[in-house]
Structures are given as C-alpha cells and as structure tokens.
Length: 616
Image (cartoon, rainbow, N blue to C red; front, side, top):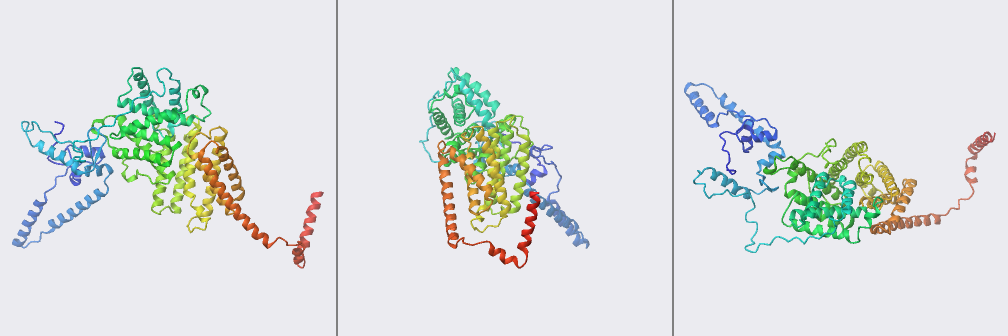
C-alpha cells in the first residue's frame, strides 16, 4: 500500500553518516536529489577490529612480539571518520537539514511539521504496519501526519464562516467595457512592478469566469475567491486611474462615486473569511493586493497587518523552504508558482519594512531558494524585469536593516552597498525600456532606489546637529544632494505628464525628505545656492498638491514650521550682529595702513594700466 516503507539492508555512506533514510539504490534518491556522490563502502565492524586487536595483544604476550600498529591505525582512521562527520554536518545544505530534522510535508498540502509528536504516530504506525502480514493488516490504518490534540473544543467546534452573498458590483455580462479596461490598466501600469499576478494565467481565468457568470455560477468558494481577486484588481485600477491622463471619458462616466470602496469591502470580507481556516497561493496573492490598495489610501497599520497575514501564510505553507507536496511534485507550474509568489511577498516584506521603519520577517536563514539573478529568464510573463529589479532592491533593504540592527553599517559596508547599487542601476538603465513598460511604473523603480540612497546616507544630517557620529560627512552630503537633484528631475517629468496625483506612495514622502535635507543644509550654511533652488522647487510641487492630497498639508506644515524656526534663529543672529554695528567707516583706514609698504599705490597703478588697455 501507499503507507508501506521500503526496508533497506544497507544504506549508502552519506545517508548512514547523517542518519537519513536511504532506498539502497545506486545512486540513492537522497544523494540524487542533493547532487551528492553516492558510495557504498564495505566497512569492517568495529567489534571485529577490537576482537582482532585483543587476539593480537594475546599473541603479543605469548610470542613476545609488538603488533599494536593495527590498533593505532584503527584509532587514527576512526578519528578521521569522526572529523569527516562533523565537517559534513557543518556543510549541510538547507535541504539536508530539512530531511535530517524531519520537517515533513503533507503529501497533498503545503504544510510543514516541526514537532516530532506530529510525525511519530505516522512513523510508528508505518513501522508496525510493515511487520504485519496481509491478514493482520485488515482494518488497520496508519495515522496521518497532523497536529493531534490541538485544543479542548469538546463538542462545540466553531463552525465554518459563511461567505456573504454574491453582489454584482460591475455588470460583466451585459457590459464588459469597464471590466476589461480596468484589467488592462492593472496589467499594463501596475502589475509589472511586482508581478503579483501571472498575467496570462489570470486572463485565462478571467475568460472562464465570464463564461461561468453567463451560466449563473457565482457562489462556489473558488469562484468567490477569484471574484475577490478580480474586485481587488478593479479597486486598485480605479484608485490609480482616477487622476490619470489616460482615463477615457467613456470609462469615467461608468464609475459611480462609491464603486471603488464597495469593490474593496466585498473582496476584503470574502478573503478574510476564507483565510480564517484556509491557506493557499491565491489567498497570499489576495492579501498582497489588499496591502497594495491600503498602502495608497489608508493608515500604515492596516497595510502592515494585511501584509503580515500574507507573510505568515507564506511561512505556514513552507513556501520559503521551496518544498512541493508529493502529489504536485511532477507539475512544473507548481514549482514556478511557489517561487514567483514567494518573491513577491519577499519584496513587500523588505521594502515595506524599510520604508516604514519596521523590521522584516523573511530572514535569509529561513529561505531555501536562490534569489533570482538579474540575468534570469523573464519570458514566462510572470517574472518581469521591473519585478526582478525590485527583488534586488528588497535584498539590499534587508541587508541595510540587518547591518543597522547589529551596529555593523560601517563606511566599508556603505561603500560596498553603493557599488552594488551602482551596478544595479547600470543594469536597469540598459534593460528596462519605456518602449516595453509604462514610464510612470519605471519611475517607481528609480524613486525606490533614490529612497534607499537617501536613507543609507541620511545619518550624516545628525552630525549637522552636533550629534557624535563617526561618518564621512562631506562625501555623504554630496551624495544626498546628488540624489535630491535626481529625485527632483523625476518629479518634474511626472508633473509635466500630469501624473503627480497618481497615488504611488513615494511621491509625497520623497518630496518631504528632499525638502528636509535642504532646510537642514541651509540651517548649517552649506551648499546654499543648490539647497535654496531645490527647496523652492519641492515646496512649489507640494503646494500644488495641498488641496488635493490630504497628507500634503501636514508635510507643508512641518516644513514651513521648521523653516520658520530657522528664519527666527537667523534673525536672532542678525540682531546680535547688528548690535555690534556696521559703522566701520571709510576704507581709507585700510589703505593708509598699507601705504607705508607701497602695496596700495602699486595695486592702483596696475589697475589703471588694465583699465587703459581695456579702453584702448
């Protein structure tokens, strides 16, 4: 039966050393999977060697000989063998650690068991079951791997949550124009930045969904989940297209004022109730879409909470371990799906943490897959070049946070990160073209890069406040100014395209950050001309947003309050200087002082000659 375990007479050397299961084949399955050399060595049992050594010692006494070399050789070989085992243990891959510690998957679900108590009933049952003959096995079933005795619910187990009744918020049967336009807008102008959805697969599902809607099938849980994902796509597209110059009038007239919020509310309720007791790839995608929507229009805590659900669902399914349940192992797309969705969660986890000041959850030591290289193939239509660029920015965000946490963000490390980002930018400049991707979407990649650079070097500003920090202040201030200028160029381009109100979240925060840098430099009397110029431009842009973007008002208030304080300080300094006076008198005092050396007259003669030559 499926629960019968193969009994092997002899395990290969590596499986024997690591005490892992071996099928006895040449090569065995474990070595094949991990790419190790599989060897079977005939080893003389230790007892035989010891017995032989005792015999040699006996012969030594009888015959007066000296034959202890064999025993010494055995001890030396044994030491080398033990050292090899220690070395092998230290060099275990994450896959091997997984096997060695019985991190066992369900055969048909994305679940990982880390408690031996959950695995032992199945293992014991399997061993005992094997020892019985067919007649004795009748009526016996090996216990499955699960968490036994999770709670004391008794007979009052909480019932499955009921999904709300289906509400047709957009008529996709009689009028497809609005729905199709919103899907196209999302896939062209939003999705490529992160690759949350696989476009070709989503469009196939969308076509099937429309056929099901025509047949009146809308209440199955799988259909309701896709409806929720679709409604989230609609809501996000409505939010981003509201002030977009590409929004056509015929689409705008189809959108009633409360549609966006109703779409989100319906999707959020369904996803929340399904997540109450289930987990799936589609639910992870749903929570990331919810996070994307909330990131543009609600408080930090709401998007942080929704993202947390997505990340914990990833970990709960073991996606970070890159393990596929046995029943899906031969399905190639399953291997693609687990990686693509995991890296989306990874990007959001690290970049959101970096931008919000919260620490990320998906640490490198629990991730059992290689980060996609910048040369990875993006022809599958899911991994896009922009999303690939964001994965590498996310990696750097996490590295910076971790180094800061450990107090190891030294000048050398900062220089190393600068060099990496320089190479990354070169790749982006050469690989991501406006002919292939939306220009505003590409701008978000560069703005994320500039945001990282500002945060990496912003610490120098504390030194301007007489804080005791050890950094190369001159170089880092110049870096801040360079990236502030680059950011302003991006915003001036976005403004010229009438896209400033498209709610990409870095728009406002970077305008604020660059303005703050300028005020601090002016307060310190540094780079005044450039700082004045940059500050006037950013304040002008922020002022144009204040009546349309609520948070622009509080940004302007804070900046102008700081500006007021700096002006007051300058006025106080001016007042003190005025008290000293400016009644320095005629410059003749200075000239008379130097007449005795003949310098003033000589200088006057030279100046007269120059003026005469110019007049001639």
